[in-house]
Length: 221
Image 1: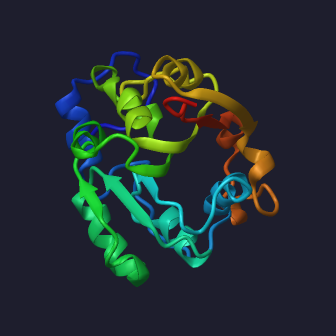
Image 2 (image 1 turned 45 degrees about the vertical axis):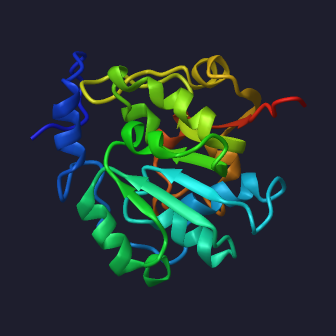
Image 3 (image 1 turned 135 degrees about the horizontal axis):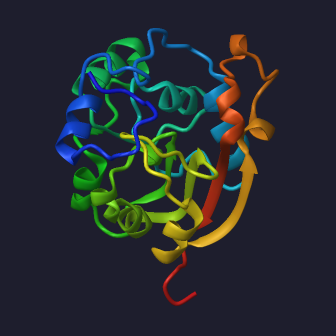
């Protein structure tokens, strides 16, 4: 069993896939499926002034669907997801019946996203997912930039983390190199709904995370 730890060497990519595809991977399994989530509300708090309810939204690494459910309940119904774990997607369909009909691609995001045309989704976002992107899968940054139409949001560690299953990506550099325009980065804490307590889904390690917002450069603009 592999899990987040202090080891510095990066595991081979197939090994990372196997870990993330487990039914209950340590650190990735959530026993509860909240109907309302402060964590998920942070996405809406940032995006709401920029988008309409009609925008198409893709979440990279949607897990059991907490964020997508929260968006749905807030009126954003044009939703899609990508998730490497078939077990997590099964739970998504059960825990959140409103998401039963939304498309969710099962498999590594860097592979799933390749089938989409340029500018397929108005918004693409990821939450604590890109930190686990294997160095051999760096192409995902360019693919996200290619497939997004208007905005990209990434809530990830500002300095990056390094372990055998985490890679310290420089989120701003990777996405600007892929052609996106950097807009802003805010501490995740300032977007949180309510108190920063464990009862309200907050963990101390989240102080290390920022919400990075990028805009897609329109051709001919």
